[in-house]
Length: 296
Image 1 (cartoon, rainbow, N blue to C red):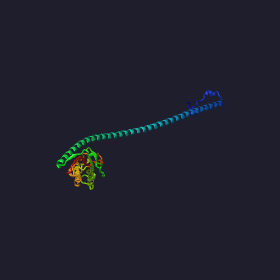
Image 2: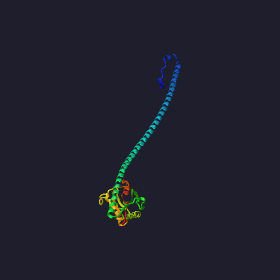
Image 3: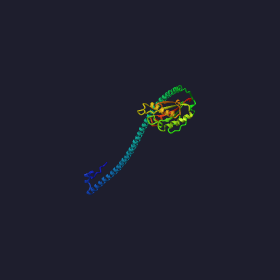
Image 4: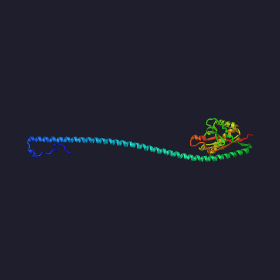
């Protein structure tokens, strides 16, 4: 490319050639030569301007392409972060489900063990009842006969907080909540406890006047307050005896028709993991057995 920086870039005229022309002709020649140089520079400027414009367009296109790539990279980073967050949440949910599954497995093992224990205890209780029945018959001389049709009718007991009677194998259980009968932590009866006990006993005596009635005390898993009771078995027996005393004192059942048992916390009907479960487990049950006692 020719350099069009200025007149100094022009070649000096050939001295011999100039010597052969007149002064006027020489001046014309110089002017023509200068005009040719200017025309050449103008053409070069147009070429350079076109190349510069093209270069700017290419740079602008590259800049736009770069911006688009950066935007795509930003979107990909954001999508990747969202996927990572979802993966983390999924792992957390999986961990929670695994923990819940482990808890359920432990509960299943505990429930199976409890079922086996309750089955053994039920057999032992039945044996104790049979022994107590035989002992009662020997002591009183009162004939005791089984009644296999006991479960045909359930008592109807409508008292606040008192669950409906339920069948349990060959017996019927009437559940009296401890919090309705006793002051907290002991066997002292609340002012309205006798009315609750006698209302339930009246309905039982109406349907089953001659059945053996067990008065069975139960507690929750909490140990009794320090002081009067050494353990929950003592507390459950004390509460069962308090109900027994009301039944006998009011003449609802004779002593020969009643037996008293304290189970402590060995027979929960609900989980002790919640306050509501503990409240249901602390109870005295009036248990109607399939054996009758002939009144003398």
